[in-house]
Picture (cartoon, rainbow, N blue to C red):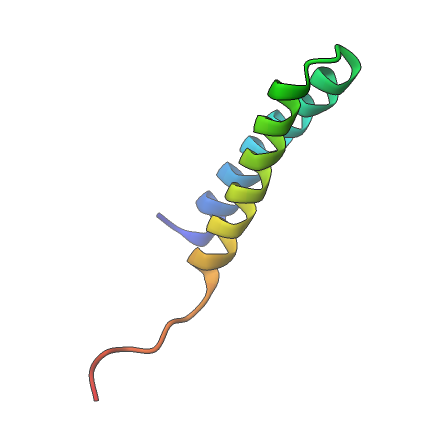
Length: 59
């Protein structure tokens, strides 16, 4: 998967989860809002982790 595709996919998922969390807050669905916010945080951390350069195990 290329960086551009990963970035677009991440942005799309984030917009979807943000929309769900905003709706859930206004509809007083706290459980759904908390779950959506957790998904946003997980998605961001996974994207950041995928973009970091980790050292090789080879010497």
